[in-house]
Image 1 (cartoon, rainbow, N blue to C red):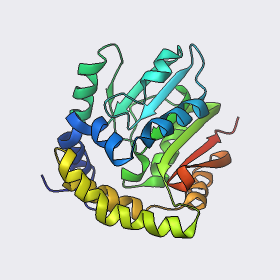
Image 2 (image 1 turned 135 degrees about the vertical axis):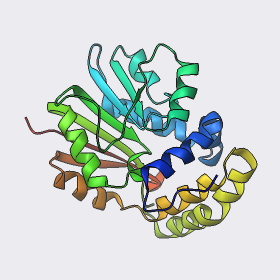
Image 3 (image 1 turned 90 degrees about the vertical axis):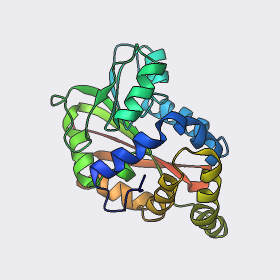
Image 4 (image 1 turned 30 degrees about the vertical axis):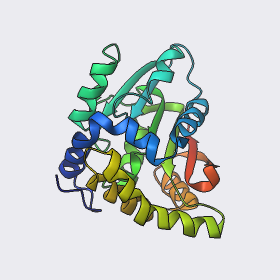
Length: 231
């Protein structure tokens, strides 16, 4: 399976994720050295879903990221554009209402959700600003967004080591554990090309979000951005 390019054509990205769906969670756990669990926990806390709230979990993949919201009593909708990911998720959690959807054309009404979150998926959308605007559209006034995404380590020596890991070690490890290792070459390149913490914050403000703030996780390897839709 050819990997997607950084122009992020939707059919190529979806096909790439279809190919990695069955071993996606295991591979992420190995490649992140188990840190992905802590990142998911931090995201859940930032969203702070309450019983009865409507939460849209974009790029939900197999639904691992959605499960804590359901456990908290929220009405969570896992949404992804990879049919392979959705099928794997439905096998695991048939009780969750998985929905196929493109982040640039979400199949939901205006102001339909109290909170929208996306973890490690915004980077894969062809138009970041457009996706942020769509998320704003489907969030109620006063509602919130939480974006968990790879970013730039803040300590320069660690940043250099991390860059070496991304471009050299990560694809090598992926060949040992992933069903489609070329997808992780794309992963490394897409992280390397992604805006830093402040750059993403500017894009969020430009899309209409207010009160944008971020918190670094794992020394800035990942950043958790939060914002609200103006009332």
